Structures are given as structure tokens and as C-alpha cells.
Amino acid sequence: MSSLIIETSFDPVAGPKVYGCPIKSYAVDGATDCGLTEAIAFGALRQSSAIEELTVAVSKIVRLRQQKTREIGDCVATVAEAIGSMDTKVDNPDERFSTIDAAKLKRANEILRKYGINEMQLNENGQVCYSVAYKQQTDVQLVLDTENNDLQQNMNTLKNLMTKRDNSYAVASKVVDKINSTAKDAIRAVGR
Image 1 (cartoon, one colour):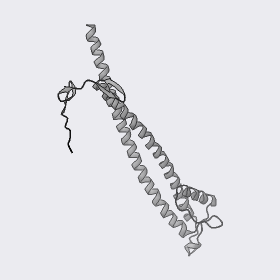
Image 2 (tube, rainbow, N blue to C red):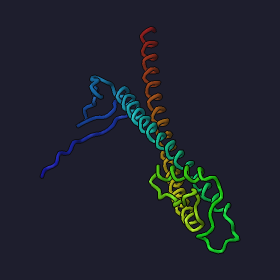
Image 3 (cartoon, helix red, strand yellow):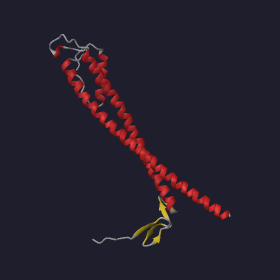
């Protein structure tokens, strides 16, 4: 297998060169005859736009994960409330039942079902016993901790994307300013 080697260089004034010949015209996404600065500006704006789209998608993920974390946190609080409502004078943990509103426990089960987490087993009165509630609290707290870690990672990703987007827009803006400055200088030179 043979390889092709192309000699390239970059001159700060003339721009890139191939075999010592300056490249004067560029084609960027179908726009032909672009100069180097226009091509760089267009590329930076395209990159900024792509990063912006990714930023929007990640921010939606963050909002959904925040909602999920909030709802699962509410479930943990409901289970803790159920455990706190139990009569501690009863020796057998399986005979200790919650005394909180059954609707709260049912709502917690709906949320758990929504996110694919095992539901609590409630008795016919909508109450939960201590051993089930204690295990549920441990299991749901583990899910909540995992979700919080994932949320933090998503938020860091979002922050990094926003920084990249801002930097990309800044590069594009500087290049466009340079183009405008060069055009103004050329117009002034012609007017003299």
C-alpha cells in the first residue's frame, strides 16, 4: 500500500500553502471563492451552531433528570414519614404498620412505577409494614444517589458545552471583526 505525502506550510501573511503555492480560494459548505478569514469565520459559526444544538439537548436531559430526582426524593421522604409514623411499641417489625395517609403511599408507588423502580407492597388498607418500608427506603435512596451523580455529570457536561459555545462564538466574532476592519482600512486607503 502506497501513501501520498503532501507538503504543506502556513505563512502568517499569505495563509496556508501547498507545495509552496498559497491557497487563495476556499469552498465552505457549498460557498465557493471564500477567503481564508471568511472560511474560518464560517467554520467557527458552524461549530457554534452545532454546539448550541447539543447544549439544548443536554439542557433538556438535565431538566428531566432534575424532575426525576425531585420526584424520587419525594418518595424517599414519604417512606421515611411512613417509618416515622409506625408504633415502635410493637416488637415484631412485620406487625408495625404506617399510619400516614394511604394516598401518599399510593402516589409514591405511582412515581416508583413511572421510573421502573420496585413498588412497595401495601396491605388492603394502603399501609406498609416496617421491614418492607425500611428495605424500600434503602433501595430508593440508592437510586436517588445514582440519579444525583448522573445529574451532576450532566450539569458539568452542560457547563463545558456552554463554555465551548461561547468560545466558538468569540472566535467567529473576532474573525468577522477582523474582516470588517480590513475592509474599512481598504476603503480608507482608496479614499486617500
